[in-house]
Length: 556
Picture 1 (tube, rainbow, N blue to C red):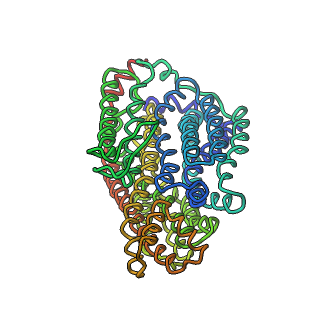
Picture 2 (cartoon, rainbow, N blue to C red):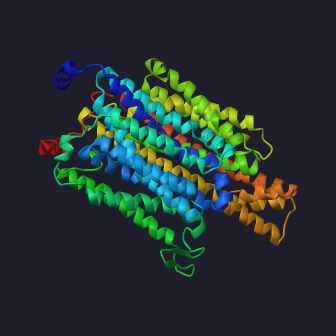
Picture 3 (cartoon, rainbow, N blue to C red):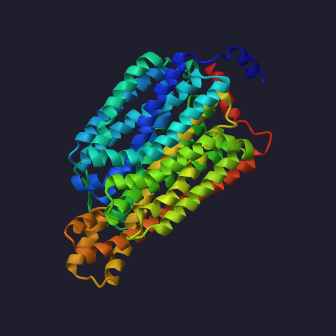
């Protein structure tokens, strides 16, 4: 009460510069969010041109989100200490440099490394946009500013496939990266004149210095987890299936155990060690990357579970569907982008009235409605996936999914942060963004793993059902699985109709399985949203007091 009373006289209308700064920050945010989904529809062309394997294709999508997740919390704290505008500008430079490298890449290794550089730049941009908005806007203006921020997140993610399809079809796939050069330059120059420099004086003076150990533990844990999910189907979940080489070191196929369970243990140890380290550091009153006491707030805890699982489902769809639409269904990349644009149509339509609907159902109720529509939409898409399906038949349920996505995304951020104290809103926002990015990385990894495992079963079954057998057919089945379906497109050009039909049928079956896995994660998110609504009706809400208060006293 005191804080609100004292703050009210200082709440003034934002200046013209502030609103222009918001537009600049939104443009920078949109650029990096768009890059998370724009790659999906171009993947079939990238796979063909650079001869990527399925696991390479997964890394192109997952590595971006995984590095972003691992660095978000650290970057947010660095921005608080040294200046958010400064980090935002640095992030633009790094992101544009990574985009130039990615567009010029002529091999899988170069493209994957360039995506890592892009993710480094994005990790500097994302938290600085949110914290800058939080520091600049107050009172009722803050709600409007956060509304713009949330709309850019969901809108850019939804429109990415269409933009990727258009650029790939009318230019070439490198332009999905090169387009960031002029956009980044405009945003950089605009930010120099419109974005105000802000920093958190308490963060700059916080005890214990930067949390380097926490950053390393989280990075190791997340990286090992994503590696396990992506490479498990190829390297073997327990017994080695093939040699693995990196930096001149070899894990041989003759080893008694695969590398995968070893890295699984490292992933668990890294994440558990990160949690234990953050807890110990907070109890000592030192600055932390992750304020674990926030998870005592039920809305925050369950809301983050919901945010993470929803991101898994969303990015699983964006990864798997373009491969099916282009390789198995035979659409060009722009046609695939048009199909996936159904999500954008639904998301923009529902996002416009989500706030009004929240006045009737409440924010948690809107999230539940949105997730129910997402689950129904994905299940409907899975049921329509066939090698002879009409593209518009697939696009129709994607509109339903997009409607749900717009409703859930528009209200989820505010719901998660509902009970977070204002003084801890920066950490709360960064934590939620981290959960989303972890979900994004796992969405691409898990859907790719599900697709790979399913293809190992459905492709041989489809060729046997078509009475196509022999060593040559087996070789093409293996090539189709490892190339994420690119072999089907090559055979279509050679007019191998019977074999194309069989492989397309098997790919459709595997795509259906992968989409149902995505629906399962969305269903988990739906359950989480039910829990959020249940705990949101309980008053009073518990406050994350002990560790947070001790740290606040130390910082003062």
